[in-house]
Image 1 (cartoon, one colour):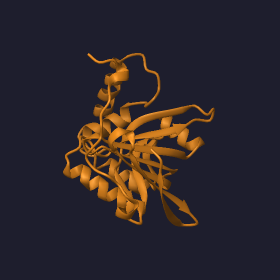
Image 2 (tube, rainbow, N blue to C red):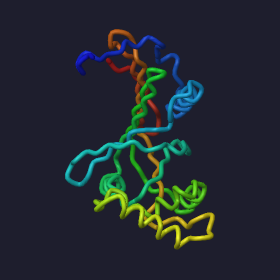
Image 3 (cartoon, rainbow, N blue to C red):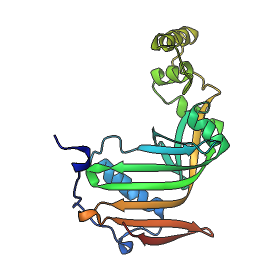
Length: 213
């Protein structure tokens, strides 16, 4: 078995040139996302959300992208979770997608803002009932004594909403939309000489540059 330092992959599937990308990073993202769908990437909408708390402590976790609307990236969560608390203090955040089947990565830096309650309610009630119950039952990111406590809370919520196919949205649950100011597209290339094309938002316009790998 190789050691960790010996694990490496040489990327050879594609290249990326400024002349070949869209003028809008949102359009470019949508093109790559559709490519990931066609390639049957496992959970192509999975992204690492990175935040920073009030003490400068960084934190990252995988969440699911639920839409790209009005040039913003949408996801939902518990506002009382660690990420929710972080974003209330510091709305600057980063999103990272990695699609190994295509040897591609997308990095997004932006500012998060809570979505309208009606949007959150509509999405919450479109979720499977089990996910709705789970959102009510879980005090996300809080320390709990054991799993039995969580299961008891699920039972309590099931009894509370017995007979209801759709649950109301918990007040602590909602969504964020991230308005980007920088988006980088990374295409793996041989010998670690990867292609990196970055879009910077300046004065309302997107500037496109190549970065050294």
